[in-house]
Image 1 (cartoon, rainbow, N blue to C red):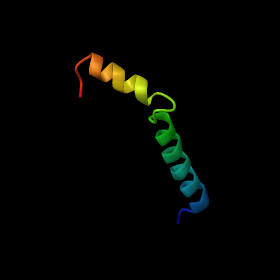
Image 2 (cartoon, rainbow, N blue to C red; image 1 turned 120 degrees about the horizontal axis):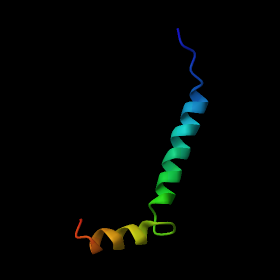
Image 3 (spheres, rainbow, N blue to C red; image 1 turned 45 degrees about the horizontal axis):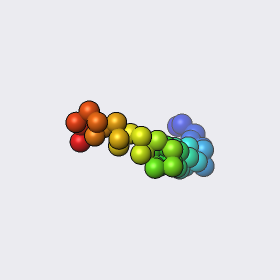
Length: 43
């Protein structure tokens, strides 16, 4: 049987979700990404 540190798994999942939310938010690169996507005709 494999021992899994569920607290570590939960912490990694939550931190990944939080970092991704911040990364794609308008605070970091969200506005730049939208501008670049629209400039190249990708929607």
